[in-house]
Length: 117
Image 1 (cartoon, rainbow, N blue to C red):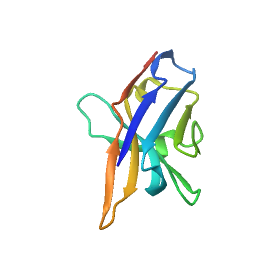
Image 2 (cartoon, one colour):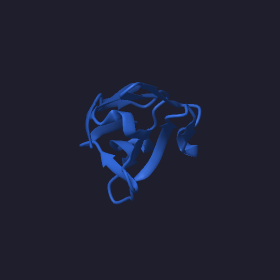
Image 3 (spheres, one colour):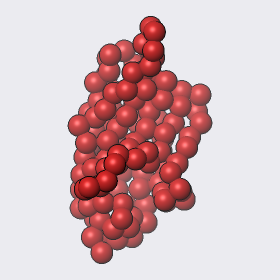
């Protein structure tokens, strides 16, 4: 099992930058992928970016070219540049963890990102 602790959200003006951090603890050797999702009020949670244990990355179209995901062992980061008001959401760290029989999803507590226009 895995525990996740996030940090780094806040309030920023449009065009600004923020960096989110997420630290995983527990059985980190079984982590297959780490990533970030976000959920705006009244909307479904959506993928922002993911990085796999093999080193590949994938980004949602709205954030391509502006956000960068990186991983350092059991920590994952999301560098967010050129922020827009539509990036306002609660951002959740996510881990895909390989159990014995199936994969499991673990989520952080969420951190609020608010971008003012």
